[in-house]
Image (cartoon, rainbow over the protein chains, first blue to last red):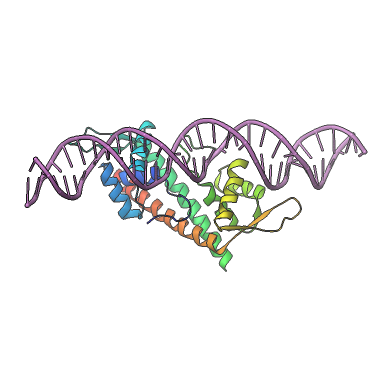
Length: 104
Length: 104
DNA sequence: CGGCGTTATATCGCGGGACGGAGTAGAGAA
DNA sequence: TTCTCTACTCCGTCCCGCGATATAACGCCG
C-alpha cells in the first residue's frame, strides 16, 4: 500500500511512533508500522532513518540480543514525538474543518 | 520558527490545507501558513510545491488577477488532503496514546 | 515625477533524505 | 548439509526542501 502521489510518508516519525509502544528491533518496527499504519518501509528507508534518529539522540541502541539490535525511545525522542504528534493533530483538525466548511 | 531536528514540514500538505480555506495566490498562501501553522515557507519551497501539486492535478491554476496567480483546490486535491489529514490524525492519536501508556 | 519599500512570482543549485534492491549472514527445520 | 526464514547492511538514484537570487509591478510620500 503506497501513496500513488508523491511521498508523504515521514519514516522517522513512524519509527518513533512504533518505538513508543516499547523497545523493538528494526524488523519488528517494519511489521508494526505495516500493521498499524499500512505503510511498508523498505530496509534502506528503515535503517537509514534509525541511524539518523540515533545520531540525533531521539532513540538509543540497546545491546544486541543475538543478531537483533533493539532500539529504545529516549526522553528527547518521546518529547519530539509528542510535539510532532500534537502539531500534526492541529493541522489535521484544521484541514478537516476547512474541508467541511467548503463542502457545506 | 524552525524544527531543530530534521525537516518534518510537508509543504505540499500545508499548501493544500491553506487552499482548503479558499482560492489563494502564492504569497497569500505563505502568509496563511505562517499565521495558522507557524511555518514559514521560502519562495523556493512554495512555488516548487505549487507546480508539483498542479502537475499532479491536486490544485489548478486560475487566470491571473493582475500579477497574482491564484490557485484552487481540485476535487482530487480535496480528497487527497482529506485522506492525508485522516491518516495524520490516526497516527497522531496512536502516538499520543502510546506515549501516555509509556509514562504511566 | 522619481525614488523606495512592499507585494508577488520565478529560477538555480546544493545538500540531504527517501526508497528499493542487492548482498550478507545467523538460526532452525528437514 | 542445504533450504529458508529472519535480520541487517550497503549502494545508487532520484526527488525534494529551501535559501539565495533575480525580476517586476504597485502604492506612497515628498
